[in-house]
Length: 244
Length: 244
DNA sequence: CGTCGTATTGAGGAGGCTCAACTAAGGTGG
DNA sequence: CCACCTTAGTTGAGCCTCCTCAATACGACG
Image (cartoon, rainbow over the protein chains, first blue to last red):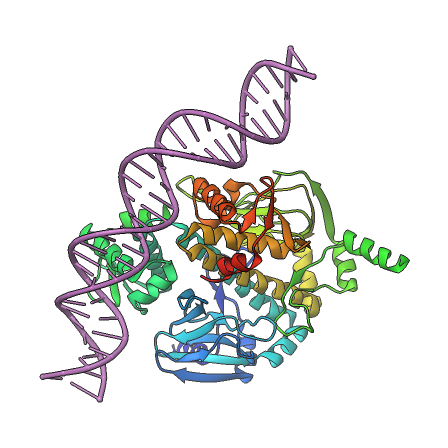
């Protein structure tokens, strides 16, 4: 019992990376990529930042000095467009990786949605470590490929024409993130605003609101407040979220 | 001169990987990631496949045994949806990488658009090599991250509401791939069908056709035949393709 | 208790999708 | 070499959904 608690504590205090790896893992689809030794190693070269909601971690086009791993919290990766509009390229959660630069500069702007604990890893030290430790680098490669698959899935979502289906798919995403099932119903947190959701799904704010409304009227999902949802009819919800 | 020809020949016969790396490279944004030594090494464990157009390289959910690098040609990565529709997740060109598996299985179906020369790298041998050669693995990490950025850019494209802008962005993509400028006009090849373009852009086939028509009527782009385009008014074209 | 950012609801209009008919091109067999 | 067939592309008409604009409600915070 004491051992268990200590392990939890350790995990809490050092970076983790989760992904579905290349090769099949026994049972669980999503696994922890980093070994205890790797976590200790990364902890040594990491700076921990505890930041409130709405904090900008970095801006697009700024010189990249660190790569980041989320310990806790939700952040958004934003691309500002020449027209003044902005698109949310990805929502990122605990054990996700971000800050992978292009030609020495960040490509997106990243901002926290909730309060967050973020590990900043010095880019130069990390790449040096990669050259020495192929095993560690391989885990980052797995995570990058995982992120690529997520981006492709995002493409599928945005490719849908119906607003209600897109919103359902976003809720499905959040469900995978933290789904708490109790008494047959499944409850989930919606950390981001409706406006964020619209920017992520390629919809207008109003379209998102109306889609939520319809989900509620049809008895599929309930929204007790703006940042929570309850899946009422799981079967119809899955049908909406998976059938494209 | 002879030396130059020999180098060309060697490059022609061994796999290459192109991307914008993390760190800034002098001048060129897109660089060759693999050294001569790495190319020789990969050639040793590669099987070269010369395949005609419309060849399926692998199907989704099949056990993954190889990772692939395109030597020459264009291929498409397809996701089949439960509804029977299909979305093209990515177009891939020479020096691109594909076949990165998820839990031991391929996630998309990949099919050639043109005749192609493809290098198949045994997955197990490659991962073993990665553990030994951190430098080589780092180049694959760069390429994976590059692919992630491309996928995010695809998201931006699909997020646009107007058909004409989306088509312009696709042409811009093809332009980067092989743009031949002569006499002020820029000509480019369109290897894929209109239907492929529609599936990639999240439009209907008809919408793509009409967008091409309007580009032509407005004097921005000419389509001498279905697989070629000429940029007539570069300024307005860029405005369409970049301004979202 | 006012104020600002976020959310909600309504009315009107534009753009893309669907359906349908038709044309063009490429490939095959006689 | 040509007729035929199949696939890809083109064009038109009508419907449907989502976007835009505008007005209002909510909720957190000072």
